[in-house]
Length: 143
Image 1: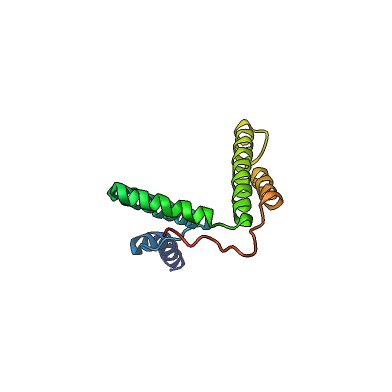
Image 2: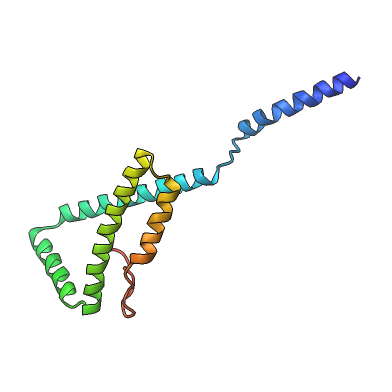
């Protein structure tokens, strides 16, 4: 009797994973969830880029000229602090890109771990990120 109960218990425990798979219940790891979110964001960004290209290609030459004039007008109306911030931000992004490329090559060479690279990039961001002028607002998207 004991052997039968023990055998039934073991068989029951062995069938639980199969039952869970049959129900379609999956558990995602935190890194798997982050990966899925990153893929969704990439897909959304790709769709936005394609929409911008389609709109640009659908424009007539007059509409392109009008859009170019609006951009030039907006740039000339920008406060000096905002222009300075944009210049500093571009320089910061260039430096960050160069730093990341350098650190990535060190990781590939084996002289640096990816965790150390992440820490160094975080320190670079905190030390060099330009401060936004108080009167400016973050971008609201395409207009």
